[in-house]
Length: 243
Image (tube, rainbow, N blue to C red):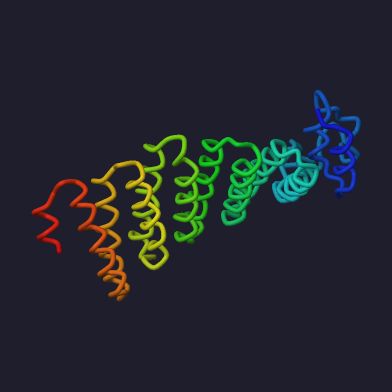
């Protein structure tokens, strides 16, 4: 239930036919000025046979407005719902970049205000999928990396899988320079979790990345870190061989 302050903030927003149905119990249609013949304006187009036809362009715009209203009113769960619906409409329009941005915004709201890291991570995964389909793999990998960071505190296994996917995407899509920081974070995460074999794998990948991008100082530094990890694992002979 919205309090008086939230309703006041909502009233300052531009009117959207979407948020009234999210607020009012049982979706009271009589309060919606855009209802015509029992249909919202987003489904008011007619097909060739006279059946209601969705207008995803209007729907996406209205859901975005609704999300902005709810965000201003600090009704974050409803803002997230509206953003997901906007993403669904944008997907139908093949506006994949915009759908990805909507999922990214939803993930950010969930992470910052609703304290549901698993849900936020899923929205970041959805954003990643659409960024990749749009042809921006560096953004797709970034979304997986953000999801991994969220899951570090609650599920180390999920975080590791997400870091694996993000690091692999940077490499597979030939975005190595973008992948340096991700590999550093993944290595640090694995060390903190005492997953030294995984930390060594990340570190060695990063060593090769440094070499491929001609960062010789970074290459030497990361090679030394790999040696230290080997020593921590008790693999003294391997450490001497690498050094």
